[in-house]
Image 1 (spheres, rainbow, N blue to C red):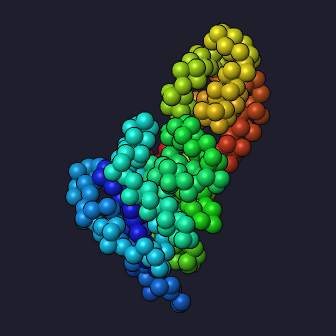
Image 2: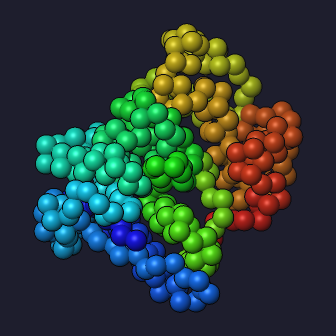
Image 3: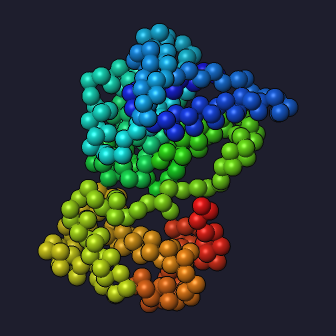
Length: 327
């Protein structure tokens, strides 16, 4: 079961290490099963003989030219993240001429039924190679607007930590590399994946949605950024979206088009996200009753906030308050 981890200069140290360590752990745990799967052979590959990581370490690699273009290698092709936070810089890096061999390899492997996977910024390589067209996918939540704009043929949901299709798997931000690797182990041996997840203290059903910071998502579009600031300035008030749009000098329809195309959500959903973010902080850092918290974030009825927490965080208010930040 051969795995190729395809890297380039600037590969994120944490993402690459997470993938490699997860497969190393899975191999170490194989013999604890009654019927262990074959071992994984993982090779780190690049266009040359080495790359420099985002933190400046030299990582030896197998050159792409030394790999067979046909046959069974690899069974899995994984593209980890780059050490880049800015979306415009990321797109420039991925679309640069020197990365064409990587994009060509992703496309050719996918065309011969190799399962392709990517996490965080690595998902941009998959999208740039065209293998995500017509499929559902996720990426790092803060890269969602840029991803959606550049790759409109992909059904993006950046609220997901992991998105699996029969031919491609994508994962979210940095620590989601572990989820990605465990999901690939699961394809071969659910029992081994379950055991590895326990060693990794990997939680069940995690989602990126609870980690999205609305003001960061809004930064890429001046109108949405203005709307986000306006909402924060009127957080405890009752207001209509049309009224907010009017004060910003645009129509409600223009605001709707902007948030839908940039964030994949309506202005009202963005308002809920902003209110929920502030409510979450109050619920976890104060002893204010639910009714007072709801009022501070603009809800007349505490039940509205209760339902929002249940719908967006998949837990009750009591469960939410009982799970404070572990650090």
